[in-house]
Structures are given as C-alpha cells and as structure tokens.
Length: 272
Length: 318
Image (cartoon, rainbow over the protein chains, first blue to last red):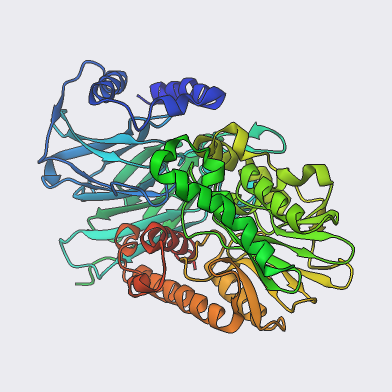
C-alpha cells in the first residue's frame, strides 16, 4: 500500500509546484468530481476490496473550517472497538492523500485515536476502519482549509530540526485494573512536506517525515503508525492502551531519511 | 502640513466613490474605491499615519489593512510601514508626494507579514535604504514566496508586488538621522514574529512598535507567546508615552495599549497551560481558552483559535 502513496505524492506534488495545479482541485469541485477522486484513491489503496459506508464503525471529527491549515486536529472514534484491526486516514485533495495508517496490537484500546494533520485544500477527509475479519468501512467529513502542506514553518530549517527525535509520553489519569488508559505521544520532528520553499535558493526543503512509529507495552504491540507528509510537524498522537503488566512503553520512530529514534517510558501499571 | 490639505486629499475620491458607488460600484476600479478613500492623520509634527481597517486582505481592499505612514525630516522622508501590496505602497507614495518633494531615503520593513511589507516594491525607484530586523531576510526566504502566491490569488499579479529584502539589517539597535530628528531602531526577540523591529522618533516622541502592539484588533501570534510577553516589558521602558500601533487607532497611549495586550496574552498563556495540564486536547482548547476576551477585540473568532493553537504548540513542550 505504502509504495503507492509515495508514488502518488511525487507525481501530484510535482504538478502542484508547477502552476497552481493544487488550485485546480479545490473549493469549487462538484460532488461528482470529489466522488470520482475518492473512487480512484480507494482503488489505488485498497484495490478491488469492497469499502462500505458506515456511520457505526468509525466516525471522523475535524473542524469544518480549520484555524491552522498546518495543524488540523482529527479525532477518529471506533465505537465497536473490539472489532477494529486498523484505521486509515485519507485526505483526498492533499498532494499525498494517504495521510496515515494505524494498525492496533493486542495491548491497544482502539476506541479513539487523535492525530494532527496538514490540509492543503478544501477536501473530503476519509476515515476507513479495517475490521479483524478483513472488511473495510469508511466515513467522511468535509474540511475547509488551504495551504497546510506548503505553509512555511516560521523558522529556519535548522531551527525546525532542533531536538529531532525527542519524545514525550503523557498519561491521563491513574491506571485502574482492566481499564484502558489514555496516552499522548509527542515527537519532535519537522516532518518537512517537500512543498515548503526557500525563497533565496528557490529550492524546496526536501521531504523529511516520520514514516513509522511503533508503540509497545512490555512484549505486546500497542500500535504501528505509518505516516506521510500530511502529518503536522512535531507529530502528536493520542491513543489508549491496556495497562496489564509492567510495561515499559517503548516507542521506536523512524523517518524516510534513515533517522531512527527509540525511547522507553516507565508505564503506569495498576498497583493492586 | 495644513490639515485642510490632508483632508482634501482624502475627501475628493471618497465623494466620487459615494456618488458613483450606489449606481455602479462594480465598474469602479477597486483601487479608487479602497486605498484612496483613506485619509492620513498627522499624529505628530511631520508624522503621517493612515489607519488600516480591522479586516482581512480582500480583492477590494488591496490588503491595505495595517497602519502605514511616513515621517518627514529636513533631509528626507522615512516610510514607517510600506503597505500590504504594491497598490497600497503606490497609494502611500502618492500621499507622500502630495505633501513633500523631499527624497524618500528610508523604508522600514517592520516584520515579515505581508500586510506590512508588500508595499515596499512601490518605492524601488527612490532607491531607499530598506531597514529590517537581522532575522527578516531568513523569514522572507522561508515565507516570501508563499505569501506572494497567496496575495496574488486575492489581488492578482499586478497589484501584489515583489518580495523586497532589507538593505540595512538591524542586529540589536541602530540610529538614523533624518535631519532635525533621529529614529532609533530596536530588533526584538521572538515575539509577534521572529523579526519584529520597533522604532522611536525623537522628533515626536512617538514609538512605532508595529505589530508588537495591536489595539482593538485581536493580536495574532506567530512567534512566541512567552517571548512577546517579555518584549512588552521592554517596550514599557523605551521612554515613550504615545505610540502608533501596527493595527488600531493611528496613535494611542502606550501604557494603556500594552496593558490590554498583556492582559490578553497572559490569559492566553495561563489558560492554555491549564488546558495542557488537564489533558484537554487542542481541538477542545481552541474553543475555550481566552473566551472571556471575546468582547474586547474585533476579529476575535478569526484569530483566537489560531492563537490558542500556536500557544498550545509552544507550551506543550514546556
């Protein structure tokens, strides 16, 4: 799946750079055009597999009008969480639409997942749930934002790369036996989209983004995220896990330029 | 400069706009509808400022939304802010020429935001010194092209203008003699943006903090919240009692303006910290933090959520 997304990123972003092609797919597209684009993306990612529409298995929450196109908070809710094996987030009109794929391991509580993404244009955001029996269900939300992928960082590239790979993990509340626990993982990384331009050199800062994040609790996998240029700089992921055992929580993150960072966190465990 | 001449310059086009406006607004070139309808205030001896309306850039307003103006010395003219577009800068240049034939020697680029620096290209023929913060060049490198593209989308190529770089880069402080008056520049730490330059005019005693001071229009945070609060303290000690804010009335009491700004930014800081400590996610924080300030500022709903997002990004790593 991933090689496709990368190929798509390259072909479309080259077009966007040349002359307002990003503008062509935009606010004024008709529903038919949007539906056609989704069919094309869907086939590219999932092939012939059937993708059913659902309003029960997955919900996507995002601001209708983004305040900051480079940081659009997305919440995925999976009410029937025991059935969920993975989720996919697709931002149809981004230069590289396949924003993230998250597979859940045995130590996950896949009821809710939060991410922050870049939105480059008025677009449908599709969330696809993959159930443990291999079926696909999608839901969608329309988001108004523009320029999120090409928005400059507000600092030099060197500054943006300071502390790259530093991580923090925060837990909400106290662990209670058998109850899932919420965690927020923060990773320092510019996640350069490849569309941010340096005016002096007339060159684009090469894409450098977190490609893979693996979170485990003790010997069990919590989740594995496959990311792309649509993830905001300094990625933050909210998720929940099952604190059954002693941990620790181990995070391994890697980017597309062979950067690799690993950190262990003392995990809260139920004391009684 | 006689006040009548100032008023007359601004009045004629606006009456023309009023006469024809009701009949066929769409046929009037937008240039004459917007920029020329503004008037210049003489806020101090030889200091002229145009108030920018509290609005976003639109095709109709030429991005003429910041307070821009000029200072006349015996040796020449200094442009305090160049305008939000080539069209806005040209309008300002024409206003200067209505009042003085002295050479335009300096154009201040107060920071990287387009509503303050895209007018600069209108002064190219004067070959002035373009004064900017030491970090303005880098900021323009990173954002100039992006801002230009967005502005062209709104105004079209012809009215937008090009990115102009500073030719005098202020490291910490600098002084310019305009003849009979001196201008003292201070390059500030990361605050509203990472390249804020303020200026004190000894001729009038007025401080030009540019967008380090918003009055009435909700501040926009694009640098560092903690840094901005620090620079507010510095501005208080610069020996000025009145100031020309980047947005708001053409001149204000400095202490009162800074007090309002400081109150908003402190509230933004304190309530964002609270939200982070309480694990309130960013999508919830944007609709609650600093909500009590809504009644105090124009364009609040457009910018406050964005400010909370910026503040959250900055403070969650504390």
